[in-house]
Length: 274
Image (cartoon, rainbow, N blue to C red):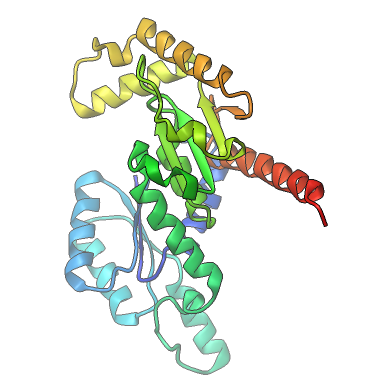
């Protein structure tokens, strides 16, 4: 577990950490983002949680006082910490011969792109896991799949790139919302996974929750039925590209989706009358 603390959006810190994690192959490391953290009480609470979870803390904080506070709190709690920006700011200050402004979020204080991303993230959070199907027409992308096919983390990752994403869970023997068939079918993507990997994921999930692993949720027979049901739904919607997420990192699956979306957008632009 890695806790990323930022006094702004946290986007830069997250990109750096994820880029570094790519060097460790398929290491299963969970990132937890804490953004716009500017109060001492918030910092104390986050460091306390990091201590409980034995997490590594990575922070990008421009305020010298807050950086020193975070270092002290982490030392006191015996929490490993990495200051991503402090040493760079100190070196630049010495090199330039000037003091830093110490204002959080200067990189994103202006620009339509920044506000578009904020709006996308807010939309995606509000429309996670099938909530508000009436908003499906407003989404840029819609992800569809059974439980634990990475719908939510994928949606969040894509939202950070400025796309409004809804995701719809497929539940065995329950029809998807009618709105799903009424929207532009070219913005819907189906997600699937191999039985063995999903079985492991769900068993791990139950163990984490302290639940018995003999529930149908983590039984091969039930999972096979769910996947077959999803396959039938996908067959009924031939316009949906189907992405197999087996063995893929979130970044890889997102790249596949973005590539397919770009190709479709290009074809539409070519076909549009001048």
